[in-house]
Length: 73
Image (cartoon, rainbow, N blue to C red; front, top):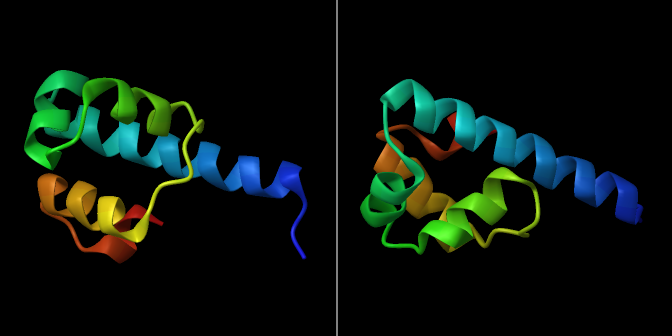
C-alpha cells in the first residue's frame, strides 16, 4: 500500500511534467485547457499536484500535447 506522501509526490511530478511540456509547446494555461476541453483552474490544479487526474483526462492532455500518453510519465 502506498503512503499519502508517495501519492502526493506522484501527482506533483506528473504536474511538473505537464507544465514542462505545455510551456515547451508555448501554450498558456488557458489555451492549453481549451485544447484539452478542460477548465483552466483544473489545469492549474494538475500542474501544482493538487488533482488526482483520471485516465480519461490524462488521454486528453496527451492528445492536446500531440504526444503518446507514456511520454507524460
